[in-house]
Image (cartoon, rainbow, N blue to C red):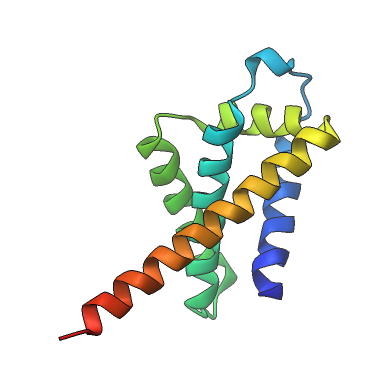
Length: 123
């Protein structure tokens, strides 16, 4: 679990780095949409991390490809997401609320996956 939090922290740093421009709250993605995107990205990171790839370059390439697919699936681009995240970072209360929701989404998805696996095992 610590590795997941480390991945979350690293992703935040990456998004924070790319969001140096000032962006008003009116232009940022809605909290639920942003939370869904971040949950997808963090789950992708966890999947890659659990692959135990020996080469960090391979993991980085795979991460970028999964991120592109995630954003494409949601009809977003990386600039939009980075600017929105930068806006949330500048508003600590909104940021905490956003990541509380991200954690809830990840937990819901984990439970759904476990329930599906348990149902598949039943004869």
